[in-house]
Length: 247
Image 1 (cartoon, rainbow, N blue to C red):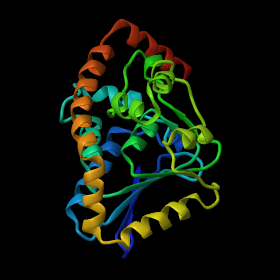
Image 2 (cartoon, rainbow, N blue to C red):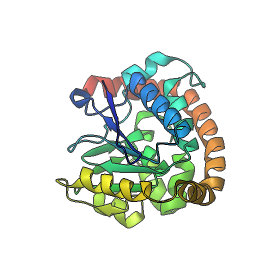
Image 3 (tube, rainbow, N blue to C red):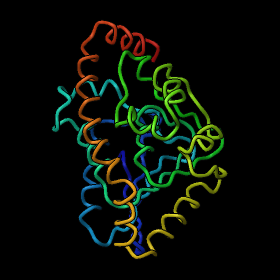
């Protein structure tokens, strides 16, 4: 399996990205697994909290571009698109544990998580423009809201990488945690949430994030439209060819 799914009796569902040979790059199958797992978790009253994690050394190296390009138009049937909308729509808390690489969707997905904990020395990066593409997952809305326009431009236009210390300083990450205890720490935080009255937690999330969620839904659609146009451009095709040649 490429996404390992487990649930404890306390109501914590853990989704573990497990594709070590590809540094947890997200394939179409993984997107579908994640979407289905979130849908089921949203319907299941026994699930109170979701933990999203990779391995102790790598969260995700981003989208598996070769796989992604085989899925055709970026419509509601595209596994990546379905995941983006489901992630934004999810009503229960998501706790993320991040180690090593968090590239592309590995960073933008964190903007939809409620609590994020990261090991020292992580590399966060959103290199969309470097590939001739544009932001995704409503990052063009959520990142400037979180860190301010200039810093968002630094990371979305230049595509510069940043580390865990910077991620904590800008508010993307709640806390830096030693890599040896990262997973256990995130699990403890998830358990603390799961022990609280579920309705209170979910209604609080809805109040905090409701307006943002509605705006993000529209921005995701706009980003996908532009993304699809750029994907067909000669400039993007040249950048992608160069990317695949390097790999």
